[in-house]
Length: 206
Ligand SMILES: C[S@@+](CC[C@H](N)C(=O)[O-])C[C@H]1O[C@@H](n2cnc3c(N)ncnc32)[C@H](O)[C@@H]1O
Image (tube, rainbow, N blue to C red; front, side, top):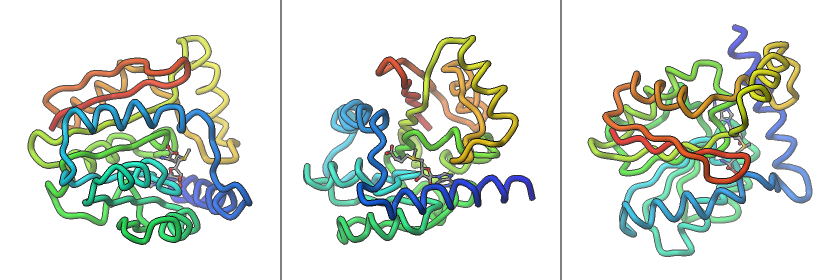
């Protein structure tokens, strides 16, 4: 019940943002897109089946589409963000959905991207196991999250425990915790490193 309320808060917040004149326009995730695309360029080819979870308006997928990638899927809790994403690129398959119950079959994707969305998830272990389920054997998860030093993260997490964050943020994770969550979900390899002064990327292999 509490989890549904938190998701509702996230959905409402991002619905409003998607309807604002400039849309999402959040600087930190944008800084991370080149790092995500760089890894995809190294591990995949133009036919790789790629899913972006918590895709928002689909910016990463739009860039990949312009580069010639053809099998692109995005899922997000916010129906308004999905509506805007579909208007921006009708060739990409955008769907409204929840990471905890991904509307996809087992082992469907070569790559799953999840950028600056994981800190909204009330059940991170379930989210991670859904990502594992939807990935092919040897498929890659590229998960980008907020990163900061230990004491600041603890202060942020204490304030987030009050559950007053307007976007329904739940928790910031250490790089170590992200790796442990991935390994617990079954990923055979998990490595997390800092990519900007505010974000880290977990790369996990199914
Ligand atoms: C900060 S935005 C990041 C958008 C985009 N990934 C980026 O990097 O620019 C977080 C996104 O996660 C989505 N989200 C939050 N909880 C979700 C859930 N349970 N399932 C799917 N998407 C979710 C929100 O609707 C929002 O679009």
